[in-house]
Image (tube, rainbow, N blue to C red; front, side, top):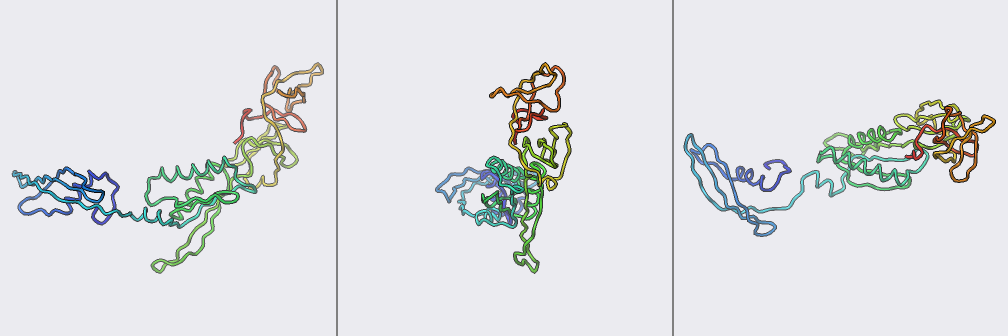
Length: 294
């Protein structure tokens, strides 16, 4: 429309196009248009137009016919998308691990939804590449890549870093492409890990990693980089029957094997069912639901 682009229904655009193209002759001061359009072919519309002119208290109607030629073309953002233009790169990786298939699907959906929700035609993802260990998103602007990295870190946990690279010059100014890297935390909610000689379960990964000591029930939070030395431990989590033996010892019963193990810390007296973490070493009361695993 005029010197710019407008996203508008064709029927609503036609009166504006008529106002731009049809001059108003004196003494008429204001003119409005109504039209009936008939498609002659994909590139031509035949219009029957009524022009209503007003001058003070006078009105006059003039009918005429005109052809509107439609020339397919692309606005600047669409042209950039078609040419796979990008300024920034958003990389998503795991911290010391590969992303799981579920994480790949979730991150991809999250990024696309964030961009679509913004409703900004200048903000787009030109392409997505699934690479070894993670995902690469090629985005229209460095600022968009940085904003998406921040949103991913806040929503999924992890760390963010960025590295600019000189790409060229534009109007005498240096142009940089910025790679924003998000490393999702090394663990998921529900993982059992050994950290500083203690067994713990991961109860949260954002914005900090929260480890709950299985032996004491005490929870502490850490920055992701501070738990990189922790190692995963094979464990099961399920709802178990709790029994108190004649000796006074409290045990958890495995629902499949029927094996009994002392449970730590001791549950509240009278507890008959509880969610436990079952390891090779012992059974522990869990602070999470039985099916908790991100």
